[in-house]
Amino acid sequence: MSRRPSYPPKAKMLKTPEDTILRNLVREATNLGWLIYHTHDSRRSPEGFPDLIMVRGDTMLCWELKSETGQPTRAQLTWVAALMQVTRLDVRVVRPEGLEDAYRTLVEAGR
Image (cartoon, rainbow, N blue to C red; front, side):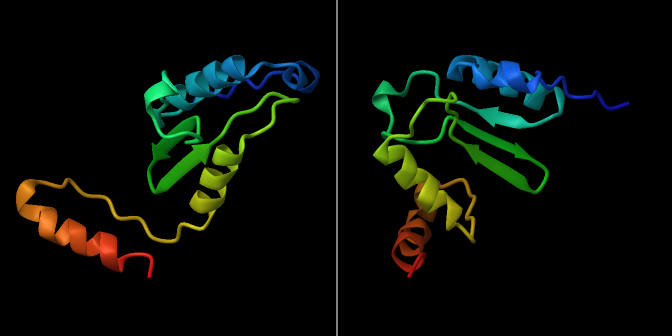
C-alpha cells in the first residue's frame, strides 16, 4: 500500500523558509523510496550546485530550493541552465585501469 503525500496547505507553503521546504521534501521523497543527495555544508563545494539530487527508477531530479522571496544566485542559475540541457548521462565507477577511457570521454563528450 502506497502512502499518500502530506502536502501542506497552499497559503502555508508561501511563507515556508528554504530549510523547511528541504526537510519536507526529503521526508516525502524518503517515504516514496527516492535515493536522495543533499550537500549539508556547501562551503567546500562548487558554488551553485542544486540543493537536492534525487533518483528513483529511471528518473533523476535536480532541484534548487527557494522560499517565496528567495532569489537564485548567478551560479545557481548557471547550474540549472546546464542541467536542463543534459540529454546524455554517463554513469560509471572509474578506477586507475579505466582512466584512459575516462579521459577520452572527457575530451569527446559534449562536442
